[in-house]
Length: 218
Image (cartoon, one colour):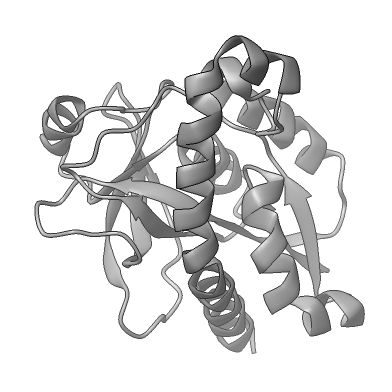
C-alpha cells in the first residue's frame, strides 16, 4: 500500500521529489502529476481507480491567497475543499506546525486579479487552486484519506499574467507560444524566480504532511 503524492505540474513535483527522496526509494510514496484544472483531475481519478494499492492521497502545490493578510510563502492545510457550485468535500488534516488550517476553493480558471480574488473570498476559503475538489470528492466516495496542502505563491492583492497560451494542461511550456507572446516570457521568468525561492518550503511542507499521515496510520 502506498501514499500517492499528487502535484499539478513538474514545477511543483521537482522540490517535492527532492524532499521525499528517501520515502520514494523505500516505496512508501509514489509521485504522480495530475495536470492543471478540474478536467485534468477527472482523468487522474480514472488512473487512480486503476491502481490497486492507493492507501492515502496527498495533493501538494502552489495556491493563490484569498485572506487579506495572507502572503507568499505561507502554508495552508485544507480541512475541506469547495467548488464553484458551493459543494464541499472533506479532507484529512495532517499536523503541520505553523500552517494555517481552513477551506480552499477549486476553480476552473485562474483568478488573475485582486478583484477576482475578492469575489472568491465570499466562499470563506483561505486560498484558491484548480485541482483539489474532484480528487477530494473521488477519495471521499471510496473511503480513501485525502490531504491537501498548499504554499501561497501570490497574495490577494497580486495581479497574475494569463499564462494559458504558453502552457499545456500539464504545465509544460509551449516554446512557440512564447515566441508569439514575448511579454509572457518575461512574466514567466519573473514568476519562476519567485517560486524558485519558495521551492524548499514547498518540499518541506510535503515532507511534514506525509510524515504526519504516516504517523496517523501507525
